[in-house]
Amino acid sequence: MRSFAIRLEPGAGPRLAGAAVLLHVISALVPWTARVPLVPAALLSLLALAGLALTLSRIPGPHCRLAAACHDGSGWRVRLAGSRSWQPAELAAASRAYPALVVVAFRAGRRQFGWLLTPGSVPPADLRRLKARIRLAC
Image 1 (cartoon, one colour):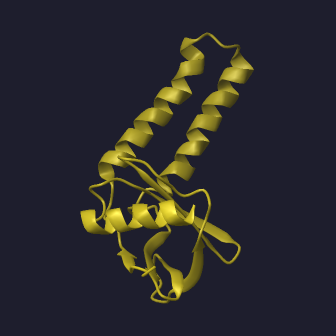
Image 2 (tube, one colour):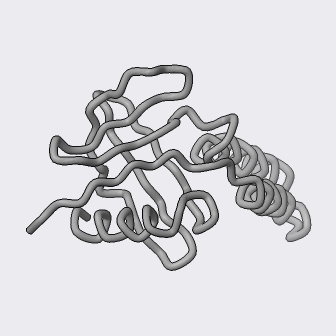
Image 3 (spheres, one colour):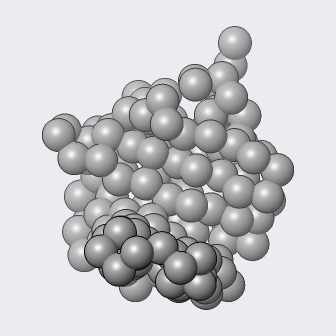
């Protein structure tokens, strides 16, 4: 089988970030509208808002630590924001390809990085290659 190269440098996803913020705020308000007792409602709301930070760190843009990813004959490599050097990485099993969303997880050393990608954040050809690579690897 012939391998195909992929180079990803996704653009910012403000619509996805806005949808994530809205979803997390709604999730934080649901326990209060469902009349859950005070302490569990507060804990659930804090959990929903804490998850917002993790979600925003996975959406390409100013809060994302991962800047670029590349796959060629030598395997996966990632470049972090503010760095010019590439680090060897591997595609984690948590990566998934859905019709309107691609969840990409990388492991570089002991650290884990990832992206939530929509069709508008990367060129269509690169998105097709990435989906095929995820389906072959995971």
